Structures are given as structure tokens and as C-alpha cells.
Image (tube, rainbow, N blue to C red):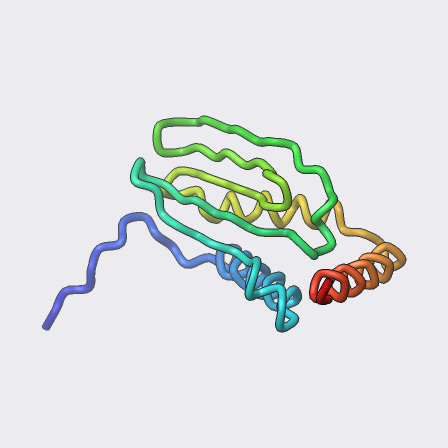
Length: 137
């Protein structure tokens, strides 16, 4: 019989599951048959060690919302850095900071959620932009 692998201090917690569900829902809400082919989310590992998250907000409600850079250095392996470069939020953090990075992005989106009038206007602008972008000129 094989021994169960040791997983350190890892604990299942509802918060971690919720942040992944939120990310899945945000991604799916932007998939329209076009957006997901050009934009999206990437999560990679870094060799220092750590995480790199890139979340593209092109053609979303958040593309024109400012994002203040964040840099927190607690220790060699406990740090986060987030910034917005053009229409992409780029985040990096220590090996146990992935959840924190995602929570910071989620909070920024919640704090900057446009009202329904802005949503309808933005949706129309996106549709017009896509129609214009896809036209043969």
C-alpha cells in the first residue's frame, strides 16, 4: 500500500475554491466566440519561485479602468506585484501568493464595477468596435 504524499501545510478552504470559481465565471462571461481566441488569462510558474498571472481586459468592462500598481514585499518567498500594462493586468507573487493575487484582482473589479447604464453603453461600443475591426477596408 502506498503512503499518502505529504503536502505540507496545505489545507482545503472554501475561499480558495471560491476565487477559482470567480475566475472561471469571469472568464466564461467574456467568452463570446471571439474574445477567447485573442485574449484571456494565463497563469504560469516563475523560477524564483513564484507565480505569474496575466489577465487581459481588452473588450471587457474593465479595459478603461485605471489600476494602481501594487508592490508588497514581506519576505523572499512572500511577495506580490501587480500592474496594468495597456489592457492587461500583470501580476507576480511568491509560491504561496497565487490566491492573494487573484483576490486583489477580484476586489479591484468589484470596487470598479460599472453601473448598468455603463454596461449597456460598453456592450454596444464593443459590438461596434468588433464590427468595425472585422470589416474589410
